[in-house]
Length: 228
Ligand SMILES: NC(=O)c1ccc[n+]([C@@H]2O[C@H](COP(=O)([O-])OP(=O)(O)OC[C@H]3O[C@@H](n4cnc5c(N)ncnc54)[C@H](OP(=O)(O)O)[C@@H]3O)[C@@H](O)[C@H]2O)c1
Image 1 (cartoon, helix red, strand yellow):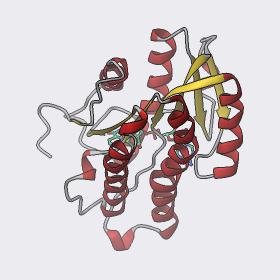
Image 2: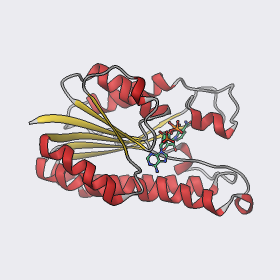
Image 3: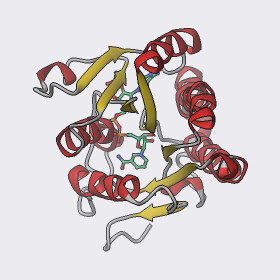
């Protein structure tokens, strides 16, 4: 059966760079790019890419879409990049923004895993790469909800890695800091320490390219001169 790789949050930053590098490196696979907006994806020239407007918080929409992919393709990998972040004092962050972080970072990622995992179990093959954050393990007083949402991602990854081991499904948690993306720019972070998004996605590709018998469980990636 033909193989596919699903990438969420694919219209921007890490997700968009994943689409580019995975389309170029794995032209024998269908790269399914999912994002709310697709204007950046529409510029891409790859014949092995399929793009869909999809909000990961909408379970029904996401399931319908993934069900059509599995009719024709085995899903060998999913890279969960969709995420959102707002920082500031806990009491000053608008409730809509707090809900958005919980909805996208927690519910959206869980939806994707919940829909795809049963297929991977049947296949006895698959890789789920969750993009968490360095904030998943260190206190972030100025990004408390964001950090907590990423602690959820890490914890979910850690537990599923154990439960899915018998199905030959790899669950990888990657915790980056300071990657050059529109999200980082929107937070106004110090630009003296920064990792190019292409360098970060090279690491994601490395993780995926390991033999199925090798699971890189948890990886932290930060700029060398970053003191956070
Ligand atoms: N950049 C960093 O330094 C950094 C550090 C730690 C962790 N991360 C994590 O890395 C991941 C990717 O972030 P990024 O830096 O690449 O940010 P980004 O450039 O803002 O990209 C985020 C992507 O998520 C999509 N998205 C947001 N809400 C969505 C929803 N409800 N349904 C579907 N897609 C949705 C956005 O879609 P639209 O284009 O439609 O808005 C966008 O394509 C996030 O989980 C983030 O928390 C990033």
